[in-house]
Image (cartoon, rainbow, N blue to C red; front, side, top):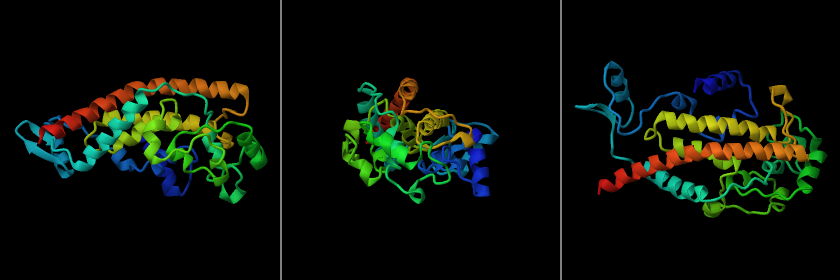
Length: 273
């Protein structure tokens, strides 16, 4: 995890911002120090001198078999697991839709002034007028509530969907980049009742998706070493949709692993009563 956490910590100490990678630690609120900290997850007994340090962490106890995480799942973890199961089952039952072309990032700067842009330190590839023209010439089809809530008011009126938290289960679909990144959020909400290998795999997927998310955005990120995916062109749209499909396929086994883990946690809860 230090591949991502160490550079972020260094940038933060210097007061530097990164328009692509900061998102993984600001929008997603799991601290870097906890991302670096290995957790075995439930049902694993740790032996040897190294196991003793786990007793300093909440939820661990010594047993004849070794140091283990207390099998009693806290209610907050159970709530997160139930929510994840409900949402991920619905997502997995749908076909991926690949026709949004990443316009959510464009809608977030639609009809804004220079000082209102989220990443004001980064220029817009097409300028403000060009960015507005792209939004106005497309059918905006964002179905993810946590992307839609950052749309400008003018852009919200142009979106085909008006997602809310109450409609998330009906609208989230596996082709959505934010749905793929959110596997990481579902995983860290289970900490420490999630194996770090699963958490780390979900984070790695989110990091790779975030790169595409911003390469397809209206920002000129060449100064950060990223080449644009120009979704305002037919070639850019095709490239974006192909990458979107690859991420949707890559998310399938992670979603299934996360679902199995959540169901196991919830089965343990049910067995306690």
